[in-house]
Every structure is written in structure tokens, then in C-alpha cells.
Length: 395
Ligand code: NDP
Image (cartoon, helix red, strand yellow):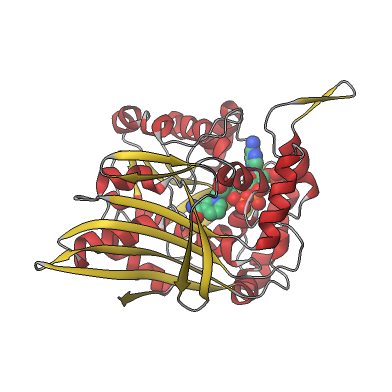
């Protein structure tokens, strides 16, 4: 039995709260806190209607460690699930350390003033968490998250050695808007406008943004043009998958999305530095976020599917083998179940399962960990039970 504090009431926070409420034998008490408390209250009302469970809500500015510590002391949780923004990772980790409460997130820290995400800031907490007897589980979403677990499962069960990994992420859904992002617009646009990067033979190779493509045949969706991006799970997987020769990450984007993005970039609307506008400093990407649809609001009427997985090639019993481990998720089904779209759903379900692994002590160790460092099998079993069934195609 556990008491959880969820911080962040956006698209992902909505799913985490609903999914935790579906598992009362693990999540006995739930508090949802965020900057705008009315969003927490709307999610609480939906949970009451769908599950008849009552959850608590609270307002918090998670950039403020003192305020977050006070909330943690009041709620007294066994676990904090951080589904606010990557900017809050370190302040929430500090608050967890001070109160001795386990921590979980779905995206690694990046400083607001530089679009550069890296694990170095969070990995630097390793000794502090170990000494305090507190656990931090990093990146328990889909990618990172389930993709790390798929790789760990392949390493444990399917291959003697893994040589090549391609993580492929396709959203073939239609939300009906000319331009919208499926998770926080600021974080999403910062991620995809960076240079692409992949790892081969021990070296990181940088390429111009969106300059390499691959027409991949996604199960349940068909052939889609995919673009090479740098993604955070690559940084931990190169350390934890033995014998790896290359890892890359690919994501699909439609023509309309790319055209909008190009125009926005060309006119300076994706800039992350302050611009003086009539005496007021305005950060263009933050203003753009205000204009774009809230990711949580896309759920209604969203059709189509996501298909995300890991293409893994290696050796088993002396023979070269290749497989694709993946999940397909339907936007409309997610909306029916929890009032969210599939990108929020595929992130929120693994956050709930990661929390369950910590609370029932299946994955429990003081220190800071990435997903592939624990036994993947119990997590894989829970994916099948909680809405993200997975499949393996041998190629
Ligand atoms: P949203 O923008 O929809 O929601 C973010 C929420 O965090 C909002 O409720 C926001 O409050 C709240 N928040 C922001 N700043 C603070 C603060 N200082 N204190 C308290 N609350 C705050 O984002 P998503 O739900 O789409 O994404 C949530 C997280 O999930 C992000 O970190 C994203 O990178 C990650 N993610 C991970 C994926 C994965 O597969 N690993 C995939 C998709 C997303 P307010 O409403 O007031 O703005």
C-alpha cells in the first residue's frame, strides 16, 4: 500500500493520476499537485466520475524547493512522481532528498536557458541519494522508459549480444489542428530543433537537425518517413547495453508539421532567449506555447494510433538475429478510458508502473537509476496488464 504525490497536471499528469486510481491495492492515497490547482481539480472530478475514487489536490510551485518540501511534509507520501516539466527535476529531487522520499520522473533535466538535455545533472545526485537511502528512477515514460525496458528485456531474454538498436517512434494520429505538439510545446520544439546525434563505435556523431530520414514500416500504421533525432535514452543505454556498436533514435513528422516548424523557426518564434518587446522581456517560444493548443486538450476527437518500438539486431547462439519489440496505442481508446490522447497515455502508464515497481519493492535500491538497470520482466508483465501490450516481430 502506498501514498503517492504526483506533481504536474498536464496531459501526462492526467493519465498518471487516472491510472494510479485504477490500482487502489498499490496506490492507496493519491494527491495531485500543480502550479494551476484548477487543472488538478478537473482531473480529480474525472477520476471520481470514472472510478468513484476521491483524490486530494494542491497548488505548488515546484521550482521552489521550500514550498515543495512543505507540501511533501504535509502529504507524507512514499513516492513523488514528477510529471511537471524537466526544468523542475532538480528542485523536486532536492525536496525528495530533504524529506527522504523516493522520486520518479519521465524526462531528464535541461536548463531553461540552454536547449541541452543530459543526465549529468541528475546522475550527479547518485551519492547523495545513496547516502540518504532514497531512490530516484529516471525516465519512466515511453521513450525514455519503455524503450529502455524493451532493450533490457532483449539483453536478458532474446540475445547473447546486442549490436544495433534503432528506437522508432511514430504518431500516425490526427488531432485536426493545423499545428500542435503532443506534449509540452516548449520542451517538444526545443528537442526537435536541436542538432541530431547518434552513437557509433564509441563516438557521438552530430548531424544537422532533421537531415537524415528513413522510411520505416511501422506495425499497425504502415510506412512513415522518420527523422533521426538525439533522444535522452541513448545516453544511458550506451552505458548499460553490453557489446553495442550503434544506437539511433527516429521519430515521424508529417509535412504540415514540418512546414509550420520551419516557418516558426525562420521568423524567430522558437527562440529561447528574451526579446525586448515594448519594454517587456518576452521569450518567443514561451509566448508561442500560450498560442498553441494545450496537449491535454487534443484528446477529444483525436483519431489514429501510435506505434513505438525498438529494432534490435544482435547474436543469439552464434546466429545473427533481428527483431522489433513494440506497442501500438489508439488515441480514441485512450480518450475513452482516461480522457487523454495516446502520447500522454503511453507516457503516463509507464510512470504509474514504475511507481508500482518502487512501492511494492520489486525495483528498490537507494541511488539514482535508469530503467534498464532493473529486471525488465516484472515491468513488461505490468505493461500487458495496464493498457500497453507489447509484441515482438522477428525479421
Ligand atoms: P504539460 O505542459 O501538458 O503539463 C505540464 C504540467 O506541469 C502543467 O500542469 C504545468 O502547470 C505543470 N508545471 C509546470 N511548471 C510547474 C511548476 N514550476 N510547478 C508545478 N507545476 C508546474 O506537459 P505534458 O503533460 O505533456 O508533459 C509532462 C512531462 O512529461 C514533461 O516533462 C515531458 O517532457 C514528459 N514527457 C515524457 C515522455 C516520455 O515518453 N518519456 C513523452 C511525453 C512527455 P500549468 O498548467 O500551470 O502550466
